[in-house]
Image 1 (cartoon, rainbow, N blue to C red):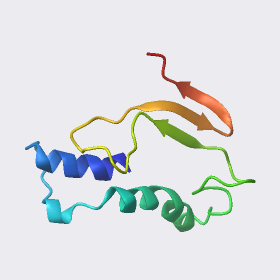
Image 2 (cartoon, rainbow, N blue to C red):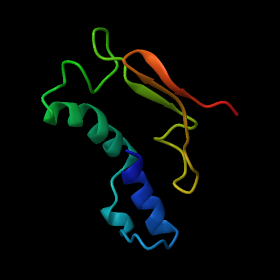
Image 3 (spheres, helix red, strand yellow):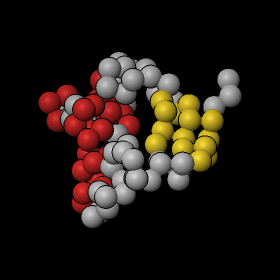
Length: 92
């Protein structure tokens, strides 16, 4: 998800990675692609792709809402949970 968003941000700020704004995908589309769509393509949608009872407990809590934050603002992971256990927690 962040790679799609990073692509749009890079195009806005003149980095070497050039993508026209009309070629970028929306944050909503990127999130769906990296979660439920990815699980469906890997034929693993019964265990992954959304947060539901009975599915694997893998998710990340981000510093900002990835659907609304401006592209020029960095989003950091604050917490990562893998298999229902905390794998990373930011301590600032």
